[in-house]
Structures are given as structure tokens and as C-alpha cells.
Amino acid sequence: MVQAEFFLSKIYNIAYYKSLLLSIIIILTLVSISIYAVMSMPYDVAVKTWNSIEHWEDSPRLALPSWVNFFVSAKLPETIVLDSRQRLGQIEKSTLYIDEMKNITFRASFEYSYEEFPSEIVLRLYVYNVVKSGVIFVYWAKPSGDVIELTRIAVDRSGSYLYYISLDRSLVERYVIRVESKLGRSPDYVMTPEIALFVKEDESMMSRSTVKALKGRYIFLISAIFFEKNAEMDFKLNIYGKVHGMFGTDDRRRDIALAIIWGTPLALSFGLTASLLITFAQMLIAAVCAWFGGVLDMAVQRLTEITMIIPFLPMLIMIAIFYKLDIWTLLLIIIALYTFSGGLKWYRSLFLSLKEAPYIEAARAYGASNARIILRYMIPRIIPTVIPTLVSSVPSFVFLEAALAILGVGGGLKVAPSWGRVLDDAVSAGALYKGYYHWIVFPSIMLVLTSIAFTLLGFTLDKVLNPRLREV
Image 1 (cartoon, one colour):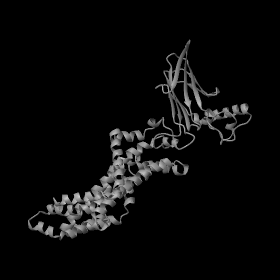
Image 2 (spheres, one colour; image 1 turned 60 degrees about the vertical axis):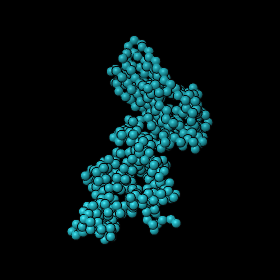
Image 3 (cartoon, rainbow, N blue to C red; image 1 turned 90 degrees about the horizontal axis):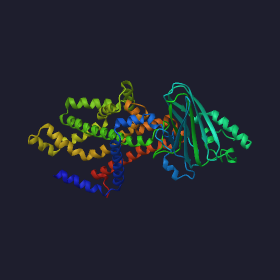
């Protein structure tokens, strides 16, 4: 009853500390994100989705967050997908039979309302029931009425055909010749297929500083000729934009939002599990050693001293690489190594002072067992002192998980959508030097917010539970 009143009075005093409010808001937000991640997508599905190339096929590469458009004058384009299989966009299909030949025509139109050019353009063709040869003609019509022949693709079998328009240098060369004949000179910059297909054909296109996209309705036309009546085909045209989602994308077209959301429960579970298990394991071992002393205490102290002088992170990396361990096995090793660290000696010193306390002598006098004294009288006595340390140590293990992911340690860390994994990919791709700041900033912010939240909470609890730090 006395202990309950003690804790209630402490909880009542916590409400007076302003640092608590910020930490509680951040922690509740992190917990809410974790619950949403677990309920919306299981862990194995999240890992599979994060590492799937096909899943991110329609996402732009290295796109900025969509909300960037609220802060720029020239709106950045979003991705446009024209898919005849799902009838995405305004797509018309017609079929004409001439003897043994079959002519399939697709006419797709879309509205383009941006001054900036797309980042990439990719065409995927899907051909079915084709044994003999066939040919596919691809055309592009601008709002001004100018028609450009993109390519001719010969097909001799069923399957999928990829036409990476953004890498077609012959298209650019043909277009530059056309511009020279029309305007009398060629542009003073290296033109790309994206500019060629969307540029406004006037004097403004001659300089890179004045060139801009032509707004209006574009028409994409495919005419396929097959020499068999059962032949069929579909297409998907991806006109990739420069903005996508809440947090943008990486160099593999993956939405960083998935890693931000699912990295939250991974970080919290790693940090909280390690902190809780290590703290209570150290308390229990220290209490047993302080109470019984002798050979047991001496052996544990020597083991702790040996562990303290061994470099922790290099040894952990070595173990993980040699034995190809996953993230959760690494967590168990971290708990085992950290248990026999400097914290164990600190807890032992607390229990040694408690061992001679009068209420412990009274417990001995009425015949309390060793287990009862340790579990009911010694450990609960130091819990108020331990709680701030426990809470404050959570960020250390969250950063440790991120560091291991950045170092590429652990099979689970290499494939899991975690904050550290995103940072590792960004550093490997040189994101900071290439100006892709969104790739680094958002996971870094999540790490910093987690650290601030638990550090502030631990600091507040320390001031409440430690009279010497209490504010007047």
C-alpha cells in the first residue's frame, strides 16, 4: 500500500514537467505508426514488397515527395500510366482483319499540365499467340499536331518487349535533324527523349534556360500488324514524374514511406526488447551476486570485466558475418553481451548497500527465503532508480540497429524495410552528393525523434524519482 501511494505521488508530480508532454506526443505517434504498420501489412509481406522489383514498376525513380509542389512555382510532374490491360487512361482499341493479317491499333490520349519534363518514359509491350513474324509501329503526337515516329519493333514470338524510350539516342538524333530543318539551327544543349517528346517547338527550345514543356493533350498511337488471326497484344506506357508519395522514392523506385512506416515497429521492438531484457537481467544477476557473494560473485565480476574490455561493435560484426545471423538472433547476442557490462557493477553496488538495510535484517529474522528477499525486498527497492536509465537506454539500441543495418550486418537487416537500411542504400548511392536529400533526411528525422522522445522521458523520470535533480 505504501509503495502504491509512493508511485501515485510520483506520477502526479510528473504532470508538472513540460518536457514530458513532447516526449509523450512523439512516443504515442511512434506507437500509432507501429500499430498501423502491423495491421496494414504483415512483416513477411512488407519484406517481400520492399524487395520486389515488379511491385514498384510504376513508381518514378528518385522522386521527391508530392508535397514539394506546394512550395515551388513550376509544378513538378506526377507519374502517368497508360495500361491497355486495365484501361488506365483514355485508351481506344480497334482491330482490322485483312486476309490472314490482323491489324491491332491502340490510341491513347492524356493531358499534360506541367512545365517541367518527365524523368523517364518506358513502353512495355505484351504479345500473345504469336508464332509467325509481326511488326509494331509506335507514334507520338503533340498538342501542336506534330507527329513523331518513335520506333518499329519486329516480333517473332509471344512474350513481353521493353522499349526504354529514355535511352533511345536515335530518336533524339532524328528529332534534332527535324528541328534544324524547321527552325534553322539546333539547340545549344544535349537533348533527351523526354525533352524531344514534350518540348514546345519554338525559339524557346534553343536554350536550356528557356526550354519548357508544351501543355495540352498528347496522343500515343500503336499500330501492330500480325500474320495470324489469333494474335493479341497489350501495352503499358509509363511516363514517370518527379514527385511521388509522402516521402519520395529511392533509386530502385521503392516508396520510402514503406520503410519509414515499417521501420518504426522494427526500431521500437528492437530498442525496447533489448533495453528491458538487459536491465532486468542485470538487476537479477547483480542481486543474486550481491546477496550470496563468494565464488559466484567473483566469477561474474571477472566475466564482466573481460566483457567490458572487448570492443563490442567489432565483435558483434564479426559474429554476424561469420555465422550469417538474422536480426533477431543478433538481438539475443546483444542482450547476452550487454548483460555482462558496466551496468551490472552499478546494480551490484546498489544491492550491496541494500543488503545491510534494517528491513532486510527484519526479513531474515522472520525466516524469509533468499528468493523472497531478492525478488520482493531488494529488486523492487531500486526499480524507481532504474526506470529512468531503462527508458534512456532505448535510443542507444535503436541507433545500434540502424548502425548494423548501415554496415550490412545480419541477413534480416539486409532485406527488412528499416531506417538503417534506407540510410545504407542512400549512402551507397551517393544521395547526399547528388542532391537526393529526401532519401536521407526522413529516416534520419525518425531516428532523431525517437532519441529525443525517450531521452526526454528518461530525463523527466530521473528528475521526479531522484530528489537531488528535482526542480524547485
